[in-house]
Every structure is written in C-alpha cells, then in structure tokens.
Image 1 (cartoon, rainbow, N blue to C red):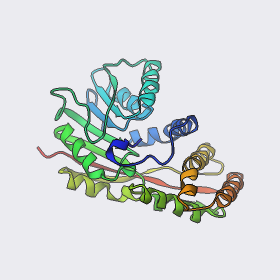
Image 2 (spheres, rainbow, N blue to C red):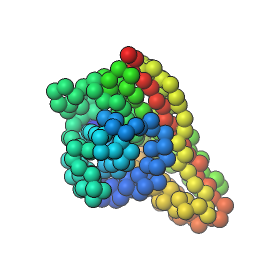
Image 3 (spheres, one colour):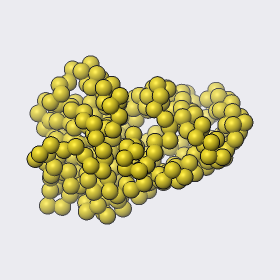
Length: 279
C-alpha cells in the first residue's frame, strides 16, 4: 500500500472489504512471486510496503531461523494484523519484524542501512508519484552485491475474453484515475529502467502470471479480485467524472455474467525485475 507521505494516493480505500481483497490476492499470487525471488537461508530481507504481511511471512519461511525480514508499512492497522499473522504462523518477531514508516524515509535503526541481502517491493511503485526515489532507498538499503526485486503492474496488459460489456471503458477510466492522483498505471514496464536509474545493475526481468480460465480453481478468486479492485476505486472514479454510476453498475452486472461463462479467461501478468547493487 502506498504511503501518502510520498505524495501518492492508494485509490482502492482501506476498509474491511479492501483488506479482504488484499488477503485474497496474496493467496493467489504469493507462491508465484516467491518462486521468482532469489532468497537464500539466512538472508536479511527488506520488504517495502509489506501490507498485511503475508509475503513477508512467506519470505521469512524460506530464509529460515537464521534469516530476518523487516517489513515497512505505513498503516498501523495493517501492521497489527501482520504481526498477528506472523504469530499464528509460529514465527518470532526476530524472524519477521513489522515497523511503521515511510517508503521514502525508511525507519532504519543505526547500522541497518547497507546491510540487507535483498530488498523487495510489490504493488507499491504504482501508487507513488516518484517511484525512482523509493527504488533509490532500496538500493541504498542493501549491501554491495545485494539484490533488489521490483514487482508491479502494467495495467495495459490486462485482457478478458470474451470481453465483458463495458470492460474497456471502465478499465481506461481506472487507469486515468491513477494518472489523475499522480500515480503510474504503467509502472510495470519501467521496473528495469528504475533499477538502472537508481544505481543498480539490472540482471533479470520476467512476468509473474496472474490470470486463470473458467474450470480452473483460481478463476473465481481471480475474477473476485478484479471486481474488488474496481469496486474499491469506483466511488472515486465517479467523483472524478471519469465514468458514471450507471456505467459502473452495468459493468459489474456484465462481470457477473462473465464469471459464469464456461469459456471465459483472464489474461494478466505482473512485471518483475531483479537488480544487483554494484560492489
């Protein structure tokens, strides 16, 4: 989740419905993301924008008892829920610590900067007006030779087929809302460039699959996540006169029909890039 102190705005809101959507998304995407992150036993990991903590906890399980994950999150409510999830997972605060703070001014303790083996962020850069400033903080946080992994959306990649009525109109309005509040709906295509401009050496880029088709067990939660994304932003989209309430209502009705089709598919991927801080 973006920190408003960076100047950006999280367009989805922060109510219980949005928290449930974030948990659903984590359930779909965490294992696929984890498979693309170069984590070793004993790694010290920084997770910027750790949210509800599911990804921090997943990374901590890979780094093991000798590893450590520090999650930075601006929402004290989400930090409390993340800490509870950590405890339920049987991990200690030494293994996974959640700390309230700003992505542009991470609340490092004395001696922590330049020590992390890996800095990671996902779905944060799209919600800040200066993603390069965040990536620079991440590069400075890792040791020389340390790794930086950026994962984020390029919203133009999304395709639904057969396309629900009104889908393109609604999705374009959604991307326009990002731009209106100073965010970047296309930041995923920039992650390699951001690594380079922040002083890291880009070494790898890939896509993390984030779609499903009817008949697949992940199809329903994938469609529910997409509906949740747009419901969370719809009030602001309407207020900004990017779309009308009747158009949104008609679109959500068409999405319900789409969810019941035996031939429906959601095509979407998250961009991921890995860089290394020069020695």
